[in-house]
Image (tube, rainbow, N blue to C red; front, side):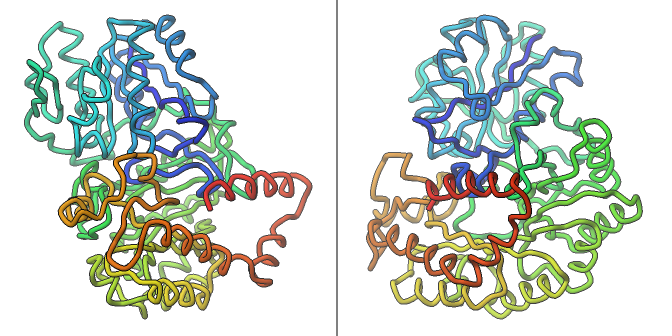
Length: 471
């Protein structure tokens, strides 16, 4: 069987990151991430003896006509493609482009949106064959077994299918219990030179450290994809993969991908110790909850090559943190960031504006709180009612969703009118928050001080241009 993993073309020039809960344009972090889920699907197919191909149209600058031509060349038996809320209509157009090139392809779409609202996918793609609900690898494995034998796919767990004009859900898929057993992503199939780390301009890779999150945050839809049970890779497996990429591709910079690298503090420390024990010369970025870290962990991270740690701050107002069911406190935020800076790490804060209950006053409190922290970076997102999260159901029930245009369901925009704040007011407040945080002499000096060569100056110029498209 021939399997084609496909990351769709840019939507009207907007290059979206498509990975689990992260559905934002590349300008958010001024880079495009490596297509982790697509690479996992390709590696699963290849591990079973099938022929696998991967195209990331975003970085390869492929349009829908290119997709049609590529489909005609490859003649794939199975196409697995990604789709995310902000570019959902455009992403589903890819199905038609594939079928126009090779009508015999079985096309399946993955992602949080399609998992939560499979009928939405079938309504937008009349020739779509299936939705893979939740994480895709084991479902891809079963699909390939059925298709190669010419058997019906209706009994395969984790699918949504169109049958007699209706959408039918097969039984729920039990996620992979031991993710160490999954074959490493097929990163030999991507153009690794096209994925570059901000500031350094060096190539980097996404590396999965675990899956699932047990926390009940109202705004997060990740459980729709990876579930709520925390499943972690062993330190040996993870560091083996890091070491392999250094030896095979010469890559030494990584983004650790998970719902929270520190959700199990003992495991996170064990990973750092494994990196140190092997003497790996690498740099990496990770994310964390503020209630998971301690000085010992952060010192180990620094010694193991961690460059930046990002914290889910969300708000500087305790009442809003409680309403989000975040389970953290304002004091824990301040303490975690102070500990990280004391350990010599760069720090980033992820902040959310416009959650129900937000006011102009609480936005101002959050911005001033964030400005008071020892931060190198801050992101200000709009609260988005992504399908699959509790906020989506709540907003629908209350009538807060301001538009049915999914292009507005992006964290640099607002798709909700909440009591006391319109979407226009929220977007204006978000832009003001960025100006107040970054347009300070200390922050300007911080970032200009990173420009140590002509190369980094050129990279920074590109970053500024891309970041403006996000702000």
